[in-house]
Image (cartoon, rainbow, N blue to C red; front, top):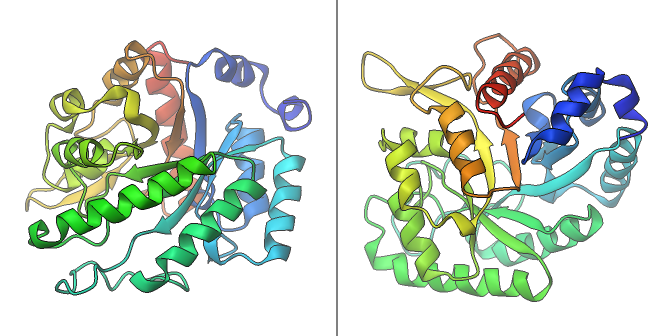
Length: 304
């Protein structure tokens, strides 16, 4: 990490080198100004990896060729590598199913189900451009009763993950409380049904879906060899029973224990800070606090 690394504190780089994980951040959790996000991630956080979700207030799958070229120049400037194309693939309503209560959150140009084949092709092209093998996807907006549609959903995810594998990519599904695979049991079932699909494990999302024991009990259900990325954030339960995001060191997920469990399982892939919490006022300030907490937990767990 020659250029940006020279501007980091030496202990920051040493710690990064000693971690068994590829530590990173989703860039827009810091800022939608991609240059600024990369500067903070590299120079201040001492990270080497970044995930691309939205840049300049545009979904990564909506970037034009000029945006892609500009982003690549910025990544080179800060010696950052892309670990994941974190687009909204399959974050859509399932056709002929009742409209999901979550489906109003349509925030990119091709959110409709019938455009998802274009989104998948675009993700392949972006993964090639940014030199990563990892593409994130979801399991469609969550339905009250998914059973009538489950077999067809599985078949589509099999087709997509097999197409990705043929081109040398990994399709990695994020467990998301707004989608049909949220809990560890749902993830374990889906991975059995779709052999080429990998998992982006997010225990805080599972807690949001009501799985209060996502770690360790939920974690124990998962096939560890199928986990290829993780998101780090936390969640607290309020007095009224609802949930809200929190820094990694406060909440229902014991991240120090989760980091140790990942290390013990031989995990060597990515863990990205996905702040979500906004308790320090701005995304950047909250991400700074969350990274400081995540770093302390990594150190406490012996993984940094």
